Image (cartoon, rainbow, N blue to C red; front, side):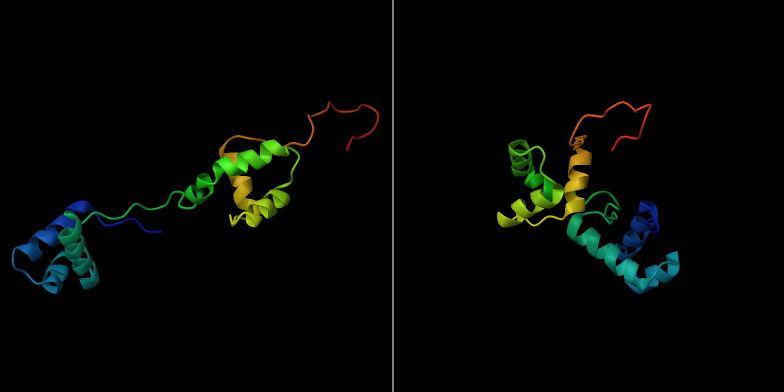
Length: 128
């Protein structure tokens, strides 16, 4: 994904438009598209500055975090529950979530879901 154009350029285009120049003329003068000039002036009009929206980052975990208390309660009630079983129990309560989403939830909270503690290596035969 490309980077947004600089705030300085955005402010110069908006300043030219507010100084009486048309949006298309300001776009030609500063070498940007007419759509960008229109969008930046609308942002300036609505929000007070033509700043770009934040890019990247996690946009989906908030939905899972809203159900965190219920996820932890189900996990504490049955610590050996599989992620598929946990997903099915949440779906029965009206919380739609996928197995990979639950995986990322537990990873985000640094919680491993091992069924049994690690054992040392056998010298005689491999252990399962």
